[in-house]
Length: 528
View 1 (tube, helix red, strand yellow):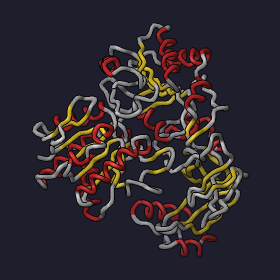
View 2 (cartoon, helix red, strand yellow):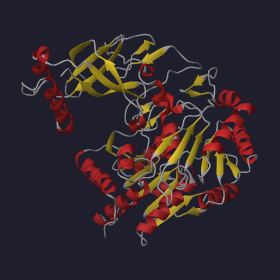
View 3 (cartoon, helix red, strand yellow):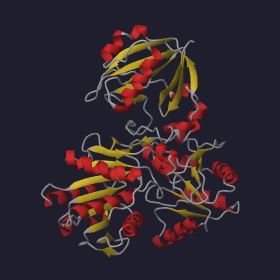
View 4 (cartoon, one colour):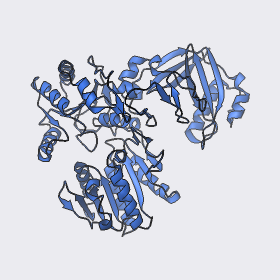
């Protein structure tokens, strides 16, 4: 019997069928936090076994809470599932189960005990970029050898990128090869499957001006030393308490263990029940704290680096970010803890004391391809998104491929960009157009497009019009052309468009908004 999946969950399963019928790689399924990846895993697994009765499936992840959640989701959806658990933290070693939910730390040395396996599904696949990467790779290599190179691997994640090496399916030594399916977080919010996240401007901001960078992220001990200051903590907590009135479940992300405890103590001084969870918290104590939080008996939990993935508390309706990060994935994961639906919950308030929204932009438009420069400090460079050439920060065009860098986002509505958690919350700004340039834009493996650059005083803003694409990009290109040359048929190629560029009407103003580091052209205004 087929599981009752939501339309987008059904589409994810179908996309995997389509992928494996045409490709031999290791695909990713990208679904926002709270949209039911575990149910997709259950549905895909059940259908695989229904089609081929002896199919063996291994579901891997990194923490016992997520192993338990995925296992219970499977049993709720399929009570007779031949499923077991292999996890030291859960004191179970059901190594022979046909469907095996396992922790990578527990099973990575036991590929030869697992033996035959057809499918490996990896939940929270973005964590392969961390310390567990070697465990995953050696284990999967052994398992693939045991199974004569026929092993299929699928990754599930809300954030298909890593801080140190960009998108999971791109770059050297990648494990995953493609994105088979992706559903946008904004679409899920607009369709009512996730609750909105609402930003609120804070008066207190953490100062990370002197904090160095290593491996693309703030150096942990320097970060905590910079932000764990009593006067700053008390000011931030006063704002949390003020804005948290009427909200029942507060989750606070801090910059270290000591910082998390200091924030907890400051919250308690206001008469609010609060506890702290860190990597050092004993298991039974941690379980008790989180159970009380989920049940509504505990108002606030502060944490340091432990509740960013694999933590499900749908009632969370206030998130405070006291943890600055250069990691796009960590930022999205932290905010994502508040997007789950719950009875009586209309939205989740996000108080960003750490400047993460200004640093990365709205969570539905973040750019996971961005790579931070290596080293121990801030280097005055920028990396070309087209060819990855390193340029000086002041460069207007890439020295490697002549790519034109967009102007800094602060030239367009700095206040809105600093606060918006969703692109729909960014207020666009009208800019007068002084000139327009048109040129061919080519990218290896992709159809050519028309790059249109609008000069607005000292600023430049570009858009790409895709005449040679299909589907929605082509429809959008036709609409764009009709607004500028209604008397001419829409061209089929960029070359045809360039032949008639002098006949195009020039807008007198364009409406632009900040999207992360870039700007997006929302609309154009023409002379009547």
